[in-house]
Image (cartoon, rainbow, N blue to C red; front, side, top):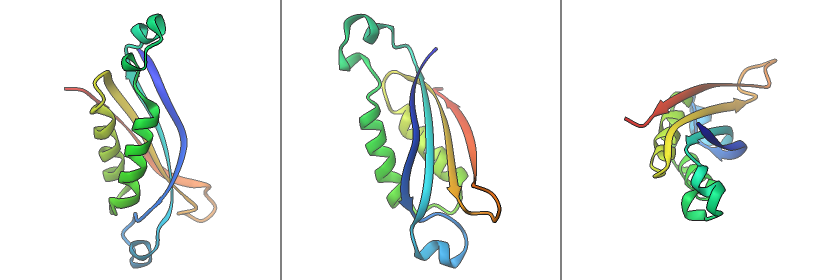
Length: 117
């Protein structure tokens, strides 16, 4: 299966369970892989046959900035669902990280994979 990759999308949003995390936006690092059959796009060079990574990125940014989720798991599930709204998307792998959330670690997070039912 072919993949569309959005790498190291950095957004700022409310995420976490602590009071201070609910008051101030923090960095959220997002990586996305969308599995799709992209043969038609490769053959005919038409945007209509692509998964438009710009459109997906805009949806993900808007959601991550406004969702105010408590857990990275919930935000990752939201983002995977957004990705699967794309007509060609068959599966989505989403990694959501909170840089600097744990002392001595560059970041912590989760990675999930969801498939179209």
